[in-house]
Length: 52
Image 1 (cartoon, rainbow, N blue to C red):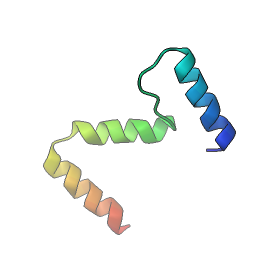
Image 2: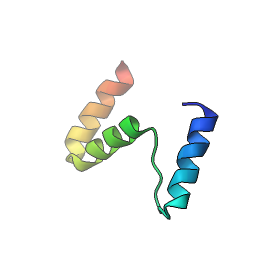
Image 3: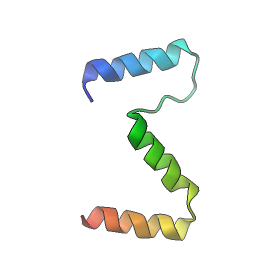
């Protein structure tokens, strides 16, 4: 993501009064999905991601 796109995303979020601004969308969604899983599954997936 370019700096210009990041700045635009932050400005857009601030203009809407958001307390939490997350981008890029795909990465943010993946992190939210990971956080919703039980901790054992989180650790297993993160270990596999670090190895590759």
